[in-house]
Length: 504
Ligand SMILES: Cc1cc2nc3c(=O)[nH]c(=O)nc-3n(C[C@H](O)[C@H](O)[C@H](O)COP(=O)(O)OP(=O)(O)OC[C@H]3O[C@@H](n4cnc5c(N)ncnc54)[C@H](O)[C@@H]3O)c2cc1C
Image 1: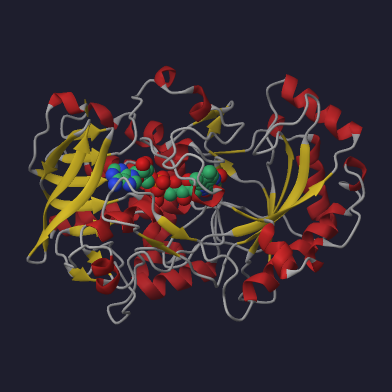
Image 2 (image 1 turned 135 degrees about the horizontal axis):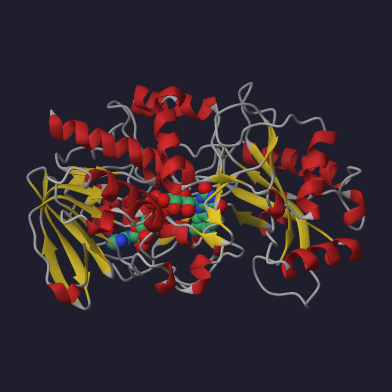
């Protein structure tokens, strides 16, 4: 059932889910499977409804990254996050990959055996099926992508399955795009569920703060169409994303007590880890000048409506990662630039190196208690004191240089001139940093004796009996992967954990 503010809200739900992004849609869908459980999904952005035709065109077009329906217009690129039902699956690159066994070892140490590769495999499979993820169709490979596959082979990488834990190597992602249509989590997970009478989907509703008393959340204050409403539930499940979830907790007095007092917020539960441990994957793009031959091949793909900037990647390993794992993605791309425009018939080509397992950590803080105030986000890129991240990134850039010089790619771009990119100074690297947009970690799960842990392996927030978090923010470390598939799977896992707890 989709409601608007004008419908009037009822209260007393079994579960209220705060944030209707990737994880929120999964949780709403799975938890409302039992008709006896009433569920309300609260999303700050609009709900464009079940019919594709009602959605803005840019959100549906999988060939480009839209800049509409985001939280802060004009914000630094690394802070882009969607504000719409379906969350960042409505604005993202539609790629799905999985991380390494080393990621699972870190998650299992923090959250217990549910987080092992074997235990998560059924959740991953469920997510792949529900979202209709599929391999890259042959017609979507451009001359550039095909050449890049051959180039990776020439460098000695093995072809691997990118959507499962495995080895370093090269391969292609799974996609949530169908003939150029971005198939977001609201379509994938809520399509069939919306008609359930026990599910309320509330778009345009900002969760401002939780009311906390005596170790329990008593209600949530929600702003809808300029009015403030109070919703009550037995369980409150926060799924507002890596930036939004710690922000909601902090506004509710759940977080580092000193920091809260300094912002004028009365601490309710002193949890130093809320908003800390922000972990994202920075990268550097090395531009290559396309030859006339490549420009004309790309123009032909564009005329056919089949120009996708990238369809393959390499998992590469630096000296810092455990055997069998990888800590770099090397990603060749060619097509329309992500930002800005080029004259018709001209395209941007290049190869990016992304740091997948950063040692550096950033943080998310409030500027004030006002929910309308933009957040204070510091990604902390390349700030680890040992300089490991910078060294790893340089290893990735060396792979970029070798890839650009292979016989399949060389004829498609002008030769690289000047200093090799791995020889750029630290300052030059910093100036050229971009992001892969995979932030995690700000409500990290951890063992009971870990003072920085915010949640446990079932998403329960420490110190509050009826509050859980279930989104990218619970991951203590970012996987060596794009994060959408891991987040879909973890939301499946945490929804199951809540169902189990209900049945105990
Ligand atoms: C530009 C971009 C490109 C990306 N490309 C890829 C890719 O190609 N492949 C990949 O695997 N991953 C990609 N990602 C990452 C992926 O989209 C995220 O990992 C995933 O969306 C995280 O899911 P989530 O549920 O944690 O958060 P989100 O999907 O961001 O959902 C959070 C939701 O909560 C809502 N919300 C926040 N605060 C409140 C509040 N107070 N009240 C109510 N609602 C609130 C937000 O509006 C949003 O809808 C990309 C991300 C971005 C931004």
